Image (tube, rainbow, N blue to C red; front, side, top):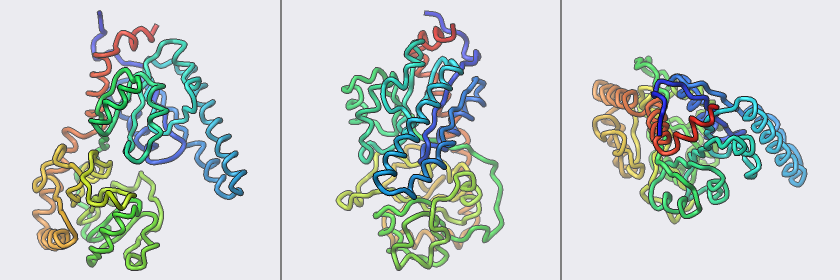
Length: 356
């Protein structure tokens, strides 16, 4: 079996969702593949986002019907773009508008391999059972027993591909640029409980649902989702960035997670100082105490926050070392370049045949 040199560019399609947290991941993946030298068709379905948002003003029955119509338009748009771009390989992010196996017809006609990058927690989002078997390859954030469950569904290839970041330059932001202690994210129940117990001076919260907790209202700096494009400046300008695991089921509060959230990479990629709870398995990617700092409970978090607010030099040294690790190992180019190489080792004959 012959494979062209790795320097030969591929023609790739990256298909993003209409909305949600995987949308910026899709855009970052498309940019990373372009920086790796490939020809990329980015099918950015966020253009249907305003139509979907407008559905919220409709009565419930009409809203659901209109939402379906929006997704059908996005699916038709995706099929059209796939026919026109004629990729050798197509990567679909979680919640991309693939409503049925027929939506992959433009690729099936040419035997083009497909990849589904499920950048979700499979414990929380169960639609992977219906979606995953439509694709040749599934990339996951979690390993066993998820891998075996996917293989049992008939997925041909499963690969562990964690999230990553687009590192920026290491620039020292002005003191007090964004505050002492910052948390950015959605107010999941366990996070609300964490932060209600913490309540350190200088705490600033950016995200929806925290204002519903009376004790946290004074700390809410932004009650809603921030644009992804501005997060790096916020992480860089905050003395301490909290990273808290998410959980909606009170029975699982305090349970060790089996995936690392995107903030872990984004904070370090921006050159920010990261203080994360130990439920997140950061040690697989960063060295605790050297590149990030971790805590186990609110009392320990208060002690660590006080220590590093006093010690600017140590805080900046850890942030710089975390940034260096993110640049070296956790950029989207590094992550996706390796994942693509593994895919070509398994399915390269189909990828290169699709170029004909």
